[in-house]
Length: 95
Length: 225
Image (cartoon, rainbow over all chains, first blue to last red; front, side, top):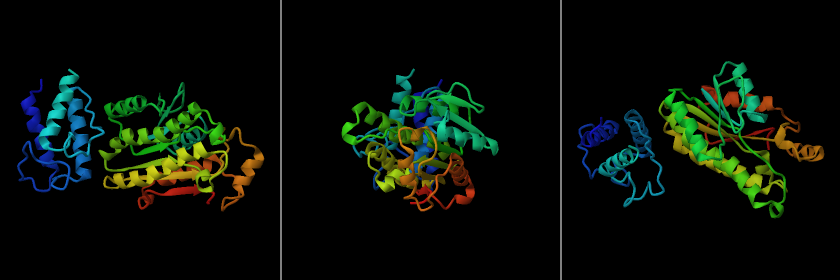
């Protein structure tokens, strides 16, 4: 059984693994899109694939598509915290 | 594994048979896929959910996808003003949305391995702007534009995306076109002869080969235009 608090840490670890600088700390506010983002579009897609696989292991389908994917205010990708929250939301929804 | 859409008949089936005969593992999808001498699954490419189910099955089975051939397509020769809305929607849904859905949902399986070749299908009719095919041409011109842009999105992952645009090939799609019309179209090709499904299959095989890893975002015209 996966604990929600552990999942957030694991997602942050996935994000960190995609960075060139592995020493950077990932927080809820770490931006994933926009000019300050630590991830380029390629890394963002890699993150999606990694989350899809993690969801598959847990036992649910993670849907990364969104009509506001690139919105700085509404996107699930806007920060590390928001993508973790969306992942947990979808997991809870499919319980 | 090479995923081929429209695998039950016509060009898609010819491609499946040629690839299979050359030792490529093929996974065919089509609306009516009752039996085939290769692994297959029924799927309406114009249904996002259907394509998603195919993608999920391939992912769950751990199948490594190295190619996607979007050969499923429908045609209807008619003037735009006399084409019923249902026919218009079917052409756009099957040809354009079907291609986009398959790319959206199957490509991520290739991104994991950072290799792959996607081949979409257009038509010589786009370049010639043939009269009486405007809806069909609109769907295929959309595929060409999608191919060029999607190729850039996939380039970081070493996945190539190209488009084959044949002249009139002898398949079911030609029903409704007279022999005279076919000859007239062929006369506008650079090589003025009618090519066969095998010619197209040969080009598919070449584009799957790693030796064409310098080609992406291109529209290749069978017969030349």
